[in-house]
Length: 69
Image: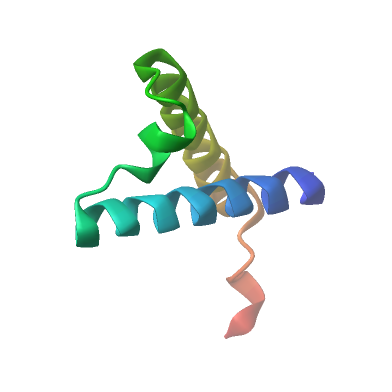
């Protein structure tokens, strides 16, 4: 469970860097890394959605901030 959360966080971090490069320069680095294949890009973006859903579930189910106060 901990490993899955770390992997999902890493996936979201990598995709956020790719989105930042696209937002600041206009160059779609993700599409470049997918060799121009739109289907592969969409599959990787769906992986990002699954990672975000997992992290939301993890935050709701385990409440890691509960003991900070």
